[in-house]
Amino acid sequence: MKDRIHKFIQNGMYIMLDINSGAVHVIDKMIYDMMDIFDGSNAEDTVQKLKGAYAESDLRESIEELQGLIEAQELFAPDIDVPPTFKEEGLVKSLCLLVAHDCNLRCKYCFAGTGDFGHDRGLMSNEVGEAAVEYIISHSGSRKHCEIDFFGGEPLMNMPVVKHVVSYVRKREQETGKVFKLTLTTNGILLNDETIAYLNDNKISLVLSLDGRKEVHDRMRPNIGGKGSYDQALKNFQKMVRSRNGQDYYLRGTFTAYNPDFTADVLDMADQGFDILSVEPVVAKDEDYAFTNKDLPQLFSEYDKLTQAYLDRRREGNGFFFFHFNMDLSNGPCVAKRLSGCGAGHEYYAVASNGDMYPCHQFVGREKYLLGTIFEGVQKKDMPAYFRNSHVLNKEKCRDCWARFFCSGGCHANADLFNGDIRKPYEFGCELQKKRLECALMVQASIAMEK
Image 1 (spheres, rainbow, N blue to C red):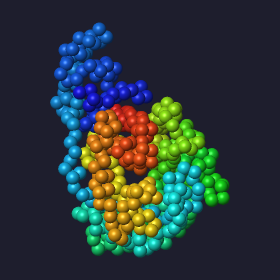
Image 2 (image 1 turned 90 degrees about the vertical axis):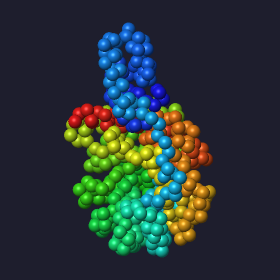
Image 3 (image 1 turned 60 degrees about the horizontal axis):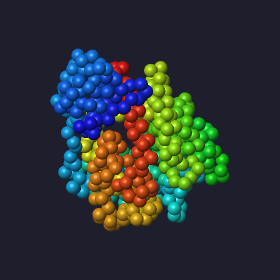
Image 4 (image 1 turned 180 degrees about the horizontal axis):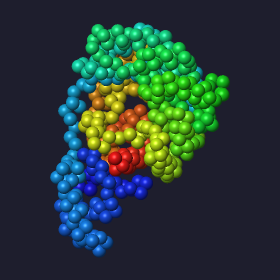
């Protein structure tokens, strides 16, 4: 039964997670020690083994509380079964349109090869954009809410097609009853008053790319001429965020082995006026800026530092939203979402500028994952089914991991990059994910206790 719980100490707090139910319990050291022995059926044995260290009356009282949690299925909850929906063909909910296979920056860690995805640079046409809208309408079934992400490269390099697709989407919404959420990811260099007004008027959500401190950002995100892009990006992002009253955006950074002290970058972004933030570890092989397992202790320590800084700022009244610390401890995702994550390759596809379809934007250019075209649809019929069934219970290394229902097996693209198999997770990423989850669980438990 002890394989159904995960207990840990984070920033001085003792926490116990019931893996299957997702229930989180803040406990004391006595219960923390009890859970090394107690399995729901050995109350007396637990008392006898620990009564030399703790008062017997306290032990028995705690066991009664634990038995109550078991009855409520918040401790040692039964295993989760694969829902029957996984045997069905998934409905498409989202498309990522790579409207520009080109970029005006030359970010050193870019998974897209600075925009060309390992091939020729090019821009999406109106025809491909319209076909993508029609594809999601015809393959989303009864689903009312759909999503389109404008991506690149740098999508603002192809603003005429972005505008054309947006107009086409709004027309087709009226004709079909579908409702589209539109998002655009940008490095910010091409943002100007006209573009900002257009994005706001058309309610397009934004993902803004900034890596934190100026010296960190400029080292990894130079322009074509090799000069830093921070000053222009910061100025444009601040104007953008002010124009929409700090709403409907998300500032995202990447940290590398050059800045393992990424807490300073998060706090710097917050100090620059951004309060919806995330930083992600770089995913790279055989590069000076890549992480290896030897970096894990330092990164774990840095997440501890960020956790404390996050809580301190919140208590001081100048808090910020940090993506990886955002968790709902009471009403988490449905079972299907907990098992399969983002839906890449069966509910979500990426469309290259020429109309080629891939499981997600990070697979673009990996030819064995070319699924078909937006005009002909998916030709490799077995691949979406394989992706759909590559959930945590079908991944050997995930099956018994305590974090499986939070990370949903991790990123398929990273697994393929490092192991050549989407069912063999990227283990360095797993270790960081588990640490982030412990921090997030502690943060949310702490906030709940303050209410």
